Length: 315
Ligand code: HEM
Ligand code: HEM
Image (tube, rainbow, N blue to C red):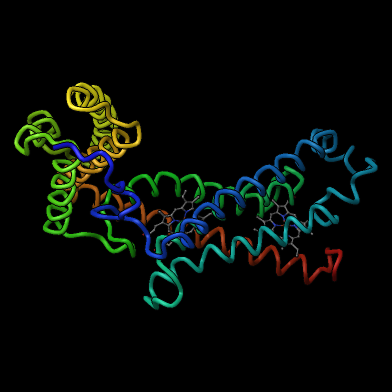
């Protein structure tokens, strides 16, 4: 009773977190990585182009013919400074959007995607602005910004391990169980396997004790990720054999099955660690925010000083 021709879980959206909005939202989702890649390439190209200048010690830079362009108050340098400031200010719209709970502003997860893209780009834009030289108080402010950006990557990793609905709200254990049930139903339908056999194939090895402490929790999360990857590969081989006895499975059907299985296993692992993961995330939040505020204060002060002193090409 295999039904390999049915629409994929992803396209039907059944049981999976697919953002609402259909094709338009897909286009938006593709637009962000494309814009990110474009800006990243542009910044790397500018840095490579300016390398003969950036590699010089500060005293020799002032005699370089490119100094009027690449110095922090130059045309290239300061345009990057303004872009960095705008991006930095934009980052604060995400916490604002989260607290406003105003649906017309669009789904929170999409705002987080933009927040992440801007947060990854801002240190590079700031570095092009400063001519890759980080002195004085604002040098420390830049350091704080870099720490927030790098810690954001860790925060995103933990954030992604708390199951959420399409609008970013955390799921309860009961909702996670319901979602797992939906996925298993769907897998039974697609693969044609008996439910009990399928559940056994998906179930993790006997549950060990829960990790104690934040570090142990993060180590367990990474271990779970690796375990899931291994089990997904095993399942893929198993299904190829199983489905192959009835009809050669299409690559797409197999891919859909494995994606659903991975999602189910992830939910099971995440449900098990839910409380510990929440504690790690709260700790991350508590550390992330003060450093972000410090960086913001340093940038505001820096901009106020340079504008007041008139050290800009537009003022
Ligand atoms: C996120 C925003 C910004 C960051 C992280 C940033 C960071 C920096 C850094 C690290 C330096 C080099 C300091 C040194 O090596 O001595 C610098 C210099 C400078 N920045 Fe910014 N900046 C930002 C925004 C701006 C903006 C918006 C402006 C102008 C309106 C600006 C104007 C300047 C000027 C004029 C200098 C040269 C100061 C001097 O040579 O004493 N910056 N900035
Ligand atoms: C200089 C760069 C960045 C700044 C200033 C910044 C700032 C912030 C702020 C103020 C918050 C809200 C905290 C709160 O609601 O209490 C936040 C949340 C968050 N940021 Fe960033 N961030 C930066 C970069 C990044 C990057 C690069 C990533 C990921 C790669 C990231 C991922 C996150 C995540 C996952 C959250 C929590 C989302 C939530 O709880 O809903 N951030 N960030």
